[in-house]
Each structure stands twice: as structure tokens, then as C-alpha cells.
Length: 393
Image (cartoon, rainbow, N blue to C red; front, side, top):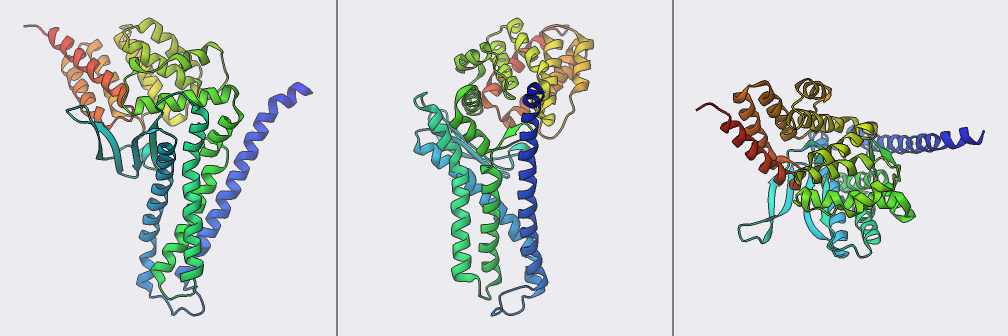
């Protein structure tokens, strides 16, 4: 009886979290639809005149602009919180816009604008890198909390402006702007502050709760946050600090993010040209593939296909794993082309192998993992040189 309870409790807790989330989304959607419907039907304060139809038609693009605004404020909240605790700002992405620090020819880091073409980062991403391990857990809590707090502040400010200054006026666009800004920023606050895990990812609230509680979950979260910040900011795999990851993996913690730790260890060892040791971690990732979000599982299978083709020279296994990869828009193009290149080379199609390797090189600037991109660029150039050398004179 007690065993059954212990087995079902996590499931019941997960279902309860999902139920609460659905209720909040329904409530927010209902409120949003009510307000939109009210404006489109002509619902307005008694003192306001009838709103022209063409004004109502322009409401929808304005709402999209407001969504962009509230997402930007949320991510800026993370950035300012990170800077306040001594983190180094590296990148912010909102929609198609990206600002990130890049080293110029002299080695000095400067803020650069870049277009963001990665769909999985369109919703917003803030990246700050810790400068030391001192009080890292409390600093990450503040960094994560910065986003929801910024959203809450914007929601309260917008609501106050709407209620005290524009609620009973005839200024349709101004009134609508403040009302919908308050609504959307409030929804962003609620959906990020509630502790939950969906699609393999934790919300801001879920991450903060894990860090507050401490223990194994906090250790894993800190390792993931730090490693992701290092990799995305341009630290190549062999230069990353693997000590916290090794410590966690040796203790056999149960956590949905463990496969990501194995992937970082795999990349680290492969960058040190230790393919046999690296394969052990890639195998561990495959064993826990169900913990990886469905949309990202293809990245694992593509890496396995690459390993089997290049290091094991096993064409049938490489093609089998490549077929398992369900390619979607969130999968980095360089991973696809790299796997296709080594498979083509193993088949003896040198022309295709070189073409795919060149395509992988050209796709690298769009990779989110800038550190891995450095190592991959080096490997691709070496691979293309080896293939060219194998051509008959």
C-alpha cells in the first residue's frame, strides 16, 4: 500500500500542476477574449464615443507589438538582475532580434546586433555568465526571479496608468495599449512564476523552487545553468569546467536534466579527442532519451549517427540512427549537415560529403551553442582537408 502511494504521488503532483496551469490559461484566455471582444463589439466606458471600425481592425497588430514588449521587459528583468549580482551580460534575444557580446579583432568584447533565426529562442532568452562560484545558488535565484518580477512590475504599472488616466477616456489606442499591456504582462508573470515542468523544461518558478530547496535538484540545476551559460557564451567544450558535472554523475542522481550533463561531458571529451570515453556518455544519454523533449531528441540521434559513421565506420548503424532523427525547425542545421557529410564520405560520395561539410560550416553562425561551434568549425575544416587529401591526384 505504501509502495503504491510513493509511486503514484509524483504522478498525481504532476497532474495537479498541469490542472492548475490549464485553469490559469483558461482564465487568462477568457479574460483576454472578453476584453478583445468588448473592444470589437464596441464595448467602452460610458463617457467614450463609438469607436470607428477601422480602429478596431488595427487592434490586433497592436496586441502583437505589446506581446513583443512584455517579452522584452521580462528578459531585460533577467539581465538587470544578473548584472546586479555580478554576472557578466552575454546575450538577450526577443523574437527576431538579438544583442550579444562578441570579441572584436583586439579581443575586446563589444555589444553587437544580430538577427535571430532560431525558432526555439523567439520567445525570449537572456544569458548572463557567473564570474565566480561564490554564493552561486542565491545569485541564480535572483537572476531567475528578475524576469517574473519585471513582468509583475510592468503589469501593475500599466494597470495603474490605465485605471487612473485612461479608463474613461475616448483615446482608443492609448486606452487599449495600457489595458492589454497590463493583461499580457500579468499573464507572463503568472505562467513563469508558477513552479512547473512542461515539455522537458522548468518554468522560472520551478527553477527557483528547486534552488531554494537545495539538495540534488539544486546541484543539477546549477550545473545546467552554468554549463549552458558557458557554452552559449562561446566557451568551447574542452575549456568548460566539468568538475561539478562529474561530481553529480558519480552520485547517480535522478533528474530529468541528467542527459544534458552527459551530452556536455560527451562534447568535452570529444573535443579532447577521447572518442571512446565520450561514447560512454552518449550511450547514457540514449538510455535516458525519454527525459529529453521530443522536439530535441533528434539532436541526440544525429550525434549518434555522426559518431557511428566517423569513429566506428559503421554505415548501417549510422543510417539507422539518422533515420530515427525526426528533423524539426528547432534542430540546428549544422548537426544535420555534419551527420550527412560523414555518412556520404563513408559511402564514398566525396562530392556530397564536401558539399554537406561546407553547408555545416555556413550554418555554424546560427548555432546557439557558440562554444561547440568553435570546436565543430575546427573539426569540419579538418574533415574537409582529410576528404580532399583522399582524392586521387
